[in-house]
Image (cartoon, rainbow, N blue to C red; front, side, top):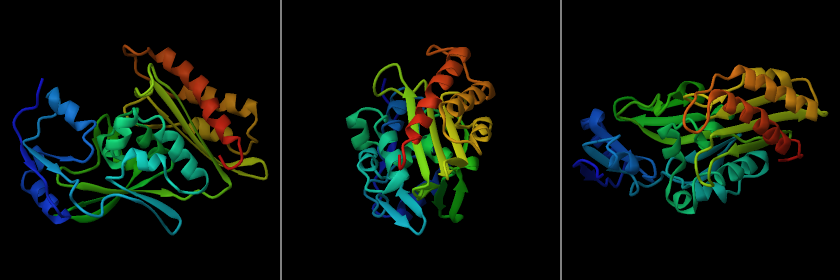
Length: 288
């Protein structure tokens, strides 16, 4: 199939792009990498009348450290995130997560912000944003800039807190110091596919004891799932094999995953039990 007819816009500054969205907010879509939007348009799962290509708008790509935060601009390609020079546990997690994103051509063209805005429940970048309590900055002509916490941003499958006339400008993540350790583990049917289940973890270890814990799971709900049960299980304990297994069991009991052609709910719970210890196992390496 092919997309329905649309008007293509290639604005050269942000105000122009926002103006086009403001003129027809309910029937316009932003195009950056197009790795999700274009296939959806070809299948007519999305049929915008206005396509706003932001690739010529300056200032929308790059990774920079601002104080104690790392800010990733919306049009930053996956491959640039994979090759990032961010030091410490955050840089390591970004590189590991990026390696799971599609195939090389997709990573070369697709964008970090586009993946966040698309909000696929199995997206590695949505998981990372959820895991680290990211802050999303969006802008519109009507309201100017606003910041949205990850917990409020991801609402349901393919649905975020972005308004139709807004553009996602950047995603801000905490620059984790060396007391933090991170990990990711994913099971996919084929290399490059979205994970059937993906587990991400970030733990802060002081004097060999977990003082903060974050666990986010993909493929088990409509949005990235923060497992409070797993996080509570880890707190105050050393990262022993027993603790990893206990956290995985707690997470598997807490989730209510869907059943589909890739696996039923019980299968996904078993994957949580298998994958979360692997993600946490990566985090047992100092500086991971």
